[in-house]
Image (tube, rainbow, N blue to C red):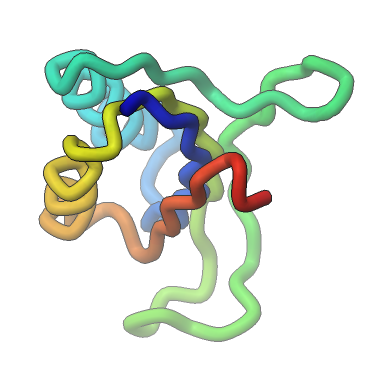
Length: 104
């Protein structure tokens, strides 16, 4: 069953172009390979939420800043574990959370 998910990502503070290349593009490719659809999250006005660098509330592994990215995707629920597994092995992602949209 296809479901809609939101995934906020906290990414290590690398160059902004690298964030797109190292994290977001591979995620888009994986979601497409799994038969899903991915888009960058938009706000209530329909504007795309940009990847933005922010100071963290507390250090994670000694890192005090990180990039936040918000992804929205449609994916079969059975394929979700494979997507989560790939996030765990991407060392540029400090934290992530998968939220099913109907739970918001």
